[in-house]
Image 1: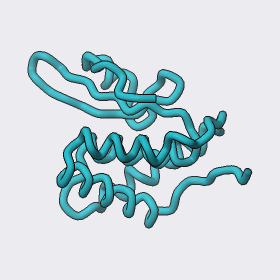
Image 2: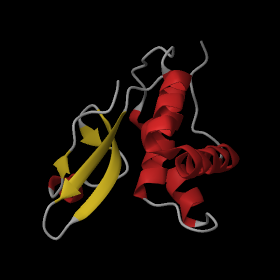
Image 3: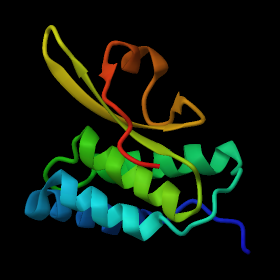
Length: 132
């Protein structure tokens, strides 16, 4: 099995568009269920950290130039999908902040946030895990 590599900017953009369309047309539940079927059979790898960090950086760059807005949910959902498609164990996390109210999404690998700082996510109450 070939070692997975950081996805191209075009691949990040394509997945981001598909995630955004899925969320708009089918809602979070349907989009997450479909994505879960796409990644379920992949073996879990012990990837090098540069692959995880590189994927997060590449997606952040694509999202910065994305037409319209790619909010934390779209970016985190896309990152989760890109990592899981490469066999990397990752969790999509959703959290809320009661006062002042706020909601946020991020991805974790090994219990550590990938696309967000640990300090930032500490202010959110994490909702129950969605799926493995």
